[in-house]
Amino acid sequence: MRVPARNRRLPRHLSWPLTSTDICSVLDETRSQALHLSFFDRRWTDGAILKADWVPPIGSNYGAGLPPEWWSSVWITVGPVPSGERAAARRILREQALPELRSWVEKARNGSEAWALSRHSIAWQYANQSLRISHDGQLYQPVELP
Image (cartoon, rainbow, N blue to C red; front, side, top):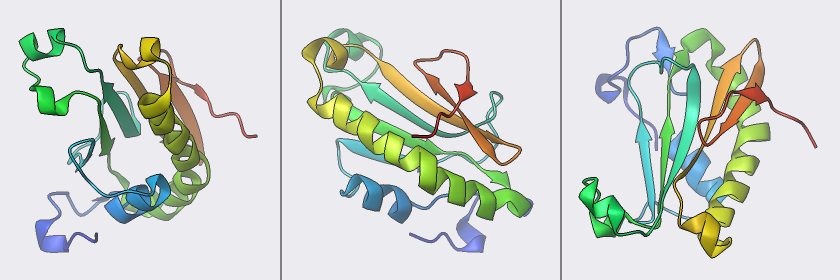
């Protein structure tokens, strides 16, 4: 999905490095109750440009304001980058982050019950034409290539 400039909600100096089509094609699915995609309209304070969260199927989520239809779902959010860095960020995210995101989503949906019953997150930062990754809110580490 391309977002027209008049609907983009971003200042002219920022661009999203990925589209919903990029993400859905890698995950081989479309948006649904189990997959939520959003595009953040400003830079995150931690510098992340791609984040995913797993909402576990546990009753205590309801007390936290999360309705049951959100349980067992993946929430993916794309943050903006400076427009001049969009092409480089897009390339590295497609090469390195999206395959890892696909594995992470598969683990969330098909992994052990113990893993699935806890909240989990994964996030990527982009700086100096390289990626750093964070699992479950830990410090960002350089992405290790296979």
